[in-house]
Amino acid sequence: MFIKIPKLLRLLTPGIIWEVDCHCKQVYLTFDDGPTPGITEFILETLAKYDAKATFFCLGKNAELYPHLIEKILAEGHRIGNHTTNHLKGWQVCSKDYMADMKRANKIFKTNLFRPPYGRVGFKQAIRLLKQYKMVLWTVISQDYSKKFTPEEVLRKVTGHIRPGYIIVFHDSVKAYDNMSYALPRALEYIYKKGYTCHVLP
Image (cartoon, rainbow, N blue to C red; front, side, top):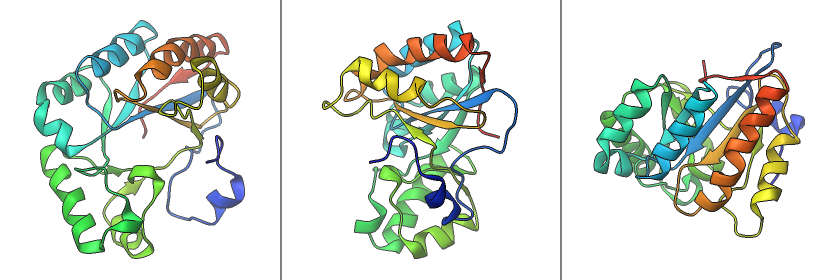
């Protein structure tokens, strides 16, 4: 998987948001797969130290279990996006089932933002989704979920690709916690030393 998505791929997928059209020093942190008790609170506490705002692409099944974490995310000025209910791979599921799973999540938390798990979505699914939602992928992925990379390597993947308007992915999950908990505070320190600020997706 690419750390930074090539510009050609972004140009070949019109309608999908890979980065924000922004010429000022702003970046957009995003967190996938939560909310997760203990880990979501760590992320929120870390963001608050830097007055950073972020967008959380949440799973419906987790939101059902931990509605207080959804409320906490919103109360602290962050934004929620839909990441399906059950973390489905769009290429392996028929469009009817995929859309039903996504809509179930959107009944739990209302949002017009959608990110397909794994970044994988079928052509017909994408056409239908783009009529109703802003589909957001990313410019840079930290790969914090992978045990192939050390926390230091995850940090370098992020700090090596900070540009205006870039959308950066971390994960709000048990699997990613060791790497993410090391890299996130250090990435925020780097981002702010470089004069950038972190915002919710517009």
